[in-house]
Image (cartoon, rainbow, N blue to C red; front, side):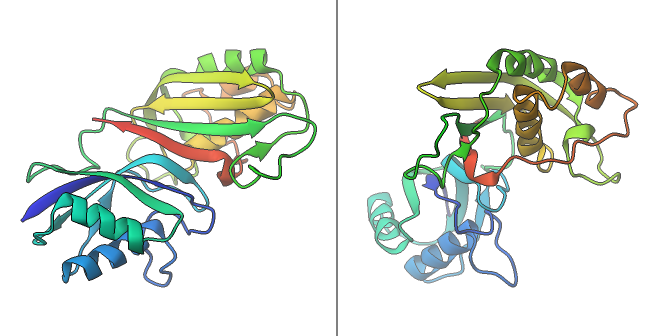
Length: 245
């Protein structure tokens, strides 16, 4: 049996996230599995590297699947390109070792959040970029981001319940860049808790707008804190950029 690794990109605007659901077939995983199963003439289950939220996009999403299909990789790529919806594209496919699984042995995951900080929204990118009319204080945001870099207990930046085994994670870097009114916040970490990235982005936006103070970030990272930051950034501005093994 072949084990095939694929890299894909998708526009998550109309999907209920990556993971297939019993009562909803409008998921990225569901769409890919359906097309692959028809192509191979067998039931295909696709494993993903990360569960992206409703409305979140991906630039280089890693997945793998097992199949007895003997079509060439080029033929499979052509089939997927023809029959997948226009908002999902498989960019590459390679043979992987029998035991390879995209969710295991991940060294780091990178997400990027895009913000239009001009006075007016851009009608052409409004589905993929968050619009903030208020001029953001990027220097304060960068200082706050430095507090978050490193290994911390991020329970204050997650919607996980108290039953979680561990809420300690490591953020390797947060880069905040700006060009012509377009801001990108790039976050790289070893793993992320449920909704952690969107909550971190929301807190940084509130820092930039003066709604939060730097000491509030320190409080949320305190070992003994029971405080949780409840806001989440809009999903449309977020994309999974890369996964490293």
